[in-house]
Image 1 (cartoon, helix red, strand yellow):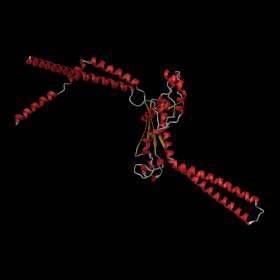
Image 2 (cartoon, one colour):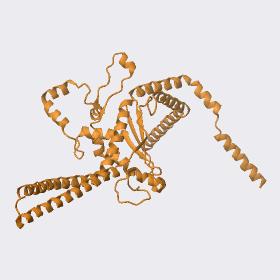
Image 3 (cartoon, helix red, strand yellow):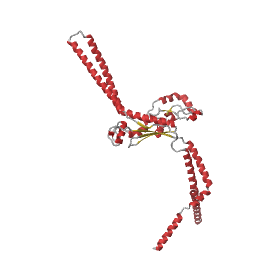
Image 4 (cartoon, helix red, strand yellow):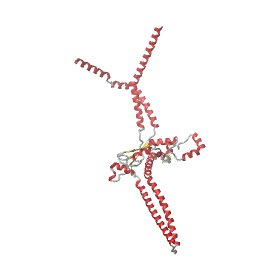
Length: 391
């Protein structure tokens, strides 16, 4: 048993020696090819500079909305979420309302909501230094034209085409966008907006964060502020739509009741003025009937006015309250990966590839070529031997 254990220990030590990495030898091998590594890394650094110059700077703006907590009986954090829009939350409380804050991301990504943003007027940012150097201040432009690059200088073919078909294209521009039938350019703009506009909802606290990313800091700020306003308008219109319809209905009934009241009062006044000296019972009956009609018309008008005022108060009651915790603020620095990090990343990639080639790649390729030549040589010798045997 002792001899077997000694033999196993010796085998294990031999295996460790075989698989032990000689770091000094690897470092010496890399140092011997340091010129190749430096040149290869420098080439990748130049490639990184080219790629970084092609990259557009991105600026990110965030707007934070918080729910309004109404009283102690609002049910804690869940009640705060529900009270934000005057409705029950979708996470734990009941309610028949189909729209709640958990749908904010879907609303912001919906095609009707994004096409409603096409008319946003934005102004590209021009630094004070550029203005002092002679640059003109940015002029307002719609976000649709800014993304689709419609205001960029056109080539001779586009200019010639516009000179012939300019009126037709102008009519198309003035045409209202139909979310159900978008052309290729409109679909592309919707895709860009959908990619750069997002909303995130914290289901525990109900806090909603709207994030907008653009290649211009001022445009990103303006779009974020407008998206926040449009989202509030969207929710307000949804929540108060039924109450507004009721208000319009009662206002119509009140107007009709007022017309009937005026007509009844006028008829009663005429009857009183012209029948003062008449003592006939039929005339008195008619006068009494007109008086009753005027009284009923007055009661109906009063009721309709009360219903109208109640409906008007209901609109204000259902109107959701939005507390803007963090408003849109123009960023000073771009977001995402900086150009320096891109160049450093390419330089490091070049170093890794060159080192891998020196340590493993060249040896592997050389061995592969040697094995391939040996196989071809053996195959040729085998074919020659077969020919000699056949002869």
